Image: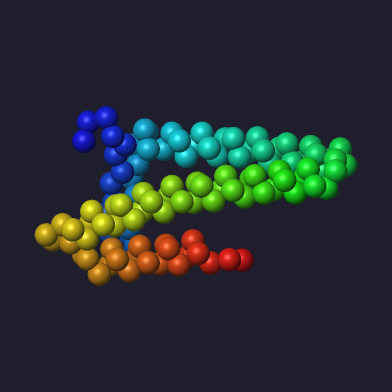
Length: 110
């Protein structure tokens, strides 16, 4: 649709591969650039022996920002999988299996 980010998915074996247009990539790249800056800031804090609580707060902010990137990617993947599964010629089972695999990986705590 005009004015909306375009994210297309295709099934390749047992995986859904996404193709994002520039409008869909831009917020992810911008957020990752901010995260890079936060990580550089954290490194500087450690090199300067800043207060541990300040360092931990920075780590928490980085973790939350990465979680948001992951949620955006998951949302894009699920939307592409649903669109693929809804097609008349859909490899429905492969699309659903891959969406579930991505969700399981996202929920795993390491």
